[in-house]
Length: 233
Image 1: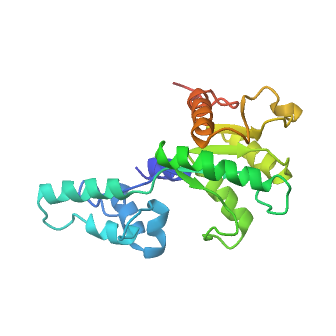
Image 2: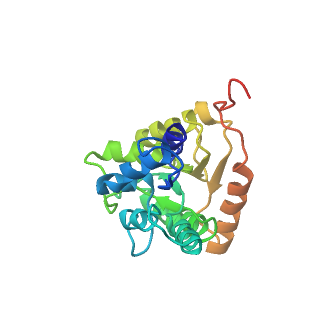
């Protein structure tokens, strides 16, 4: 159980331990539960949306006392519904002084975010000056969030070195990665064969979203560049 908990955490998935007397207090899910009772640790297990924070939720699902089965089930269902959506990490141009920033910003605000959050049920993560930091160093913040994202959208418009570093990390980690770029930009040699969505600045928002959505659907089942097959199936 502890091994699986670590695997899920490393993959950015929520870990919701139950304090059920099915094992010793110092092992398995019960050990994870005690770990989460320390308020600084709870958000490392899972994050939630709404009025109740993760620590309050963990206390609510403490079923060590005698609680009716229906109440237990209802509490767990409500917690599952309150879990924060899986993350899509945005690798993109963020320098407002760059001549192509405005068009990239418009593409993410008008096309990417409505599709990713409004239709696909993900939460788009952008580490910029407006982002509330969870780490002291911005590079640590970027790679921790990137590491534990479910999907990465990497836009290489503007050809920023940091974007290529983050794109390479995502590909090496075998994360589902969608490559986007403003129409007319030539790919660097290493990714010339990697299918990208070449977005245009003209057209209606609905049409631009349709084309992006089609590329998303075509890319989501694409095998990663790095094989993730187990040594022994």
